[in-house]
Image (tube, rainbow, N blue to C red; front, side, top):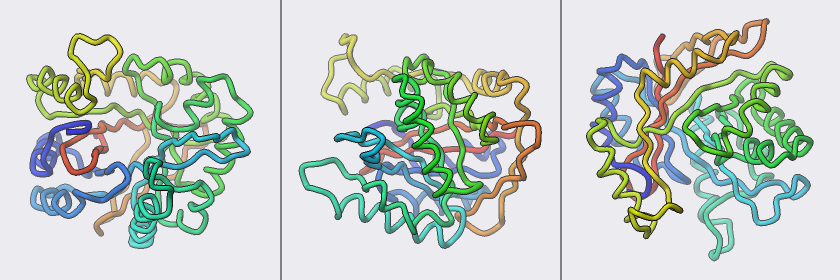
Amino acid sequence: MLEGAMEPKTIAERVAKLGFPAVALTDRNGLYGAMAFSEACMAKGVQPIVGAMLGVARPGEIGGEAAIDWLALLAKDEQGYANLCKLVSQAHLDRPVEQEPHVEFPRLEGLSDGLIAMTAESEGALVRLIADGQQLKAEAYLDQLERLFPDRLYIELSRRNDAVEDAAETGLIDLAYARHLPLVGTNPAAYADPSFHAAHDAMLCIANSAYVESAERVTSSLTPGSRIRQQCRSFSPISPKRWRIRSSSHSAVRSPRPSEGPSCRGLVRMRMKSSGAMHVRGLMRD
């Protein structure tokens, strides 16, 4: 209820109906729903990919005073899954109890193998720094991410009327082209059926102790899948990337980057009810 309301079975049924070859679940600082999610997906013939939205303290040299950002991490193989388990455990156990669960950035050293990283839209340090006009710090942060996740780093783009994301979009695309990094278009989806929009908006008010009529609150968005696909394709002349999904569980690899520049791939990020906030990323077929 922190961010969405979908059970693992609902996710599996929906993505199977949409023809997704795989879908990734990213709990917020946890792996709470990984088992139920994996079982539900395999029952529907959809490959489950386990991940996490990890809270990461911004490096001090990049202006990280009390700043905690997010990284979306997906387990590419068994090593990645093992490293992800260690990271989410450290997020809860190795931090001051008065602070939100997170890991210090240096903790990623030695625990990034087998993990695919995405920059987490407006919740990520890269987007926040660019939107704040701190280009040099954004590039320094990206340097560190590229070093930790070589050939496994994706820059996220989302178009959902978010001021931070809108302010950073041009800078993100420029960085992707300059560094030959792939782009991935994403959109949060918190429920499977559009008719649940009003109920989800009310649930967010309960979760955040806010009134429905309050202008300063988190609101539920309503973006049709057709619009997501169109938005992703509008990143011209960026051409779609082809994904290869391995048959083993918890694995996803991408095809080589095209030489002409970065590519864009659309993902739907779903959010569901759990003891922790969950996100689901599904690979969209053209």
